Amino acid sequence: MNNTPDLLNIRLHLVTGEVASFLAEDASAVQTVLDSVRRGRVFSTQSLVIADSIHVNAFPGSALIRVDLFSNPLPLDMEGHSVGEGEPAHSTEITQEEWLSETAAMRERYPDRHAMMSDEGGRINVYGRTTLMGGDHIYLQFDVPTPNVSEQRRFLHNLYSQPSLAFRNNEGGISVLNTAHVIRSTFYPGAEPPLGAWYLRERQAL
Image (cartoon, rainbow, N blue to C red; front, side, top):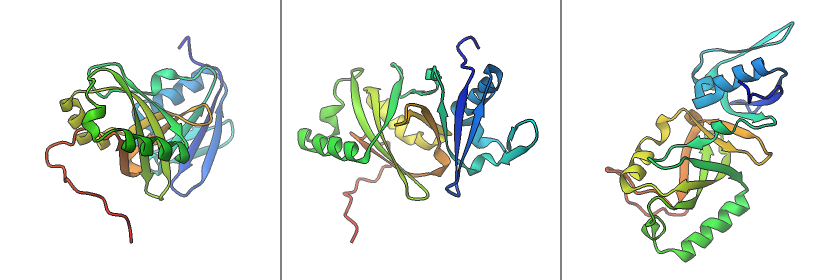
């Protein structure tokens, strides 16, 4: 509680495209929000109730696509992701142009994923594109300790069992994404596919 900021700006992105903005103005209110958003608990609640002195709003958790948090200091413990036994991975939102440039350079520089993932435990950059049900994309750069083959397969197999994905957004805050609204995730380099994966070459749309 000692490191909890006294002020927190919150934006809720709803399935309708609406963005609802709120402000927590004391450490107790901030802590309540952070505890609810950690590990995506807010997305599984039947009714997220937001109240001030005179009125209340109630949102079904399933209607939330993304929650953006802005404070000083930032709640840094919310953005780490476990991909294995090593240090956590950290992710940062980037532009589409950066994603296209970095993935194109990766395809030119390396013959396959194994050439990039050979230094087990060493940190690498992974570039991800997350596609939402509405067709929007979120582009991310992950700073990742290279997991072993078993950890890579387990990560892909369990990818959507996690209720949320947290990342540093491009406005300087932290965003938490509801994975129930994700329809596709693409990674460069890709992790080692799990058993049962389909080995296919993607064709361009006609």
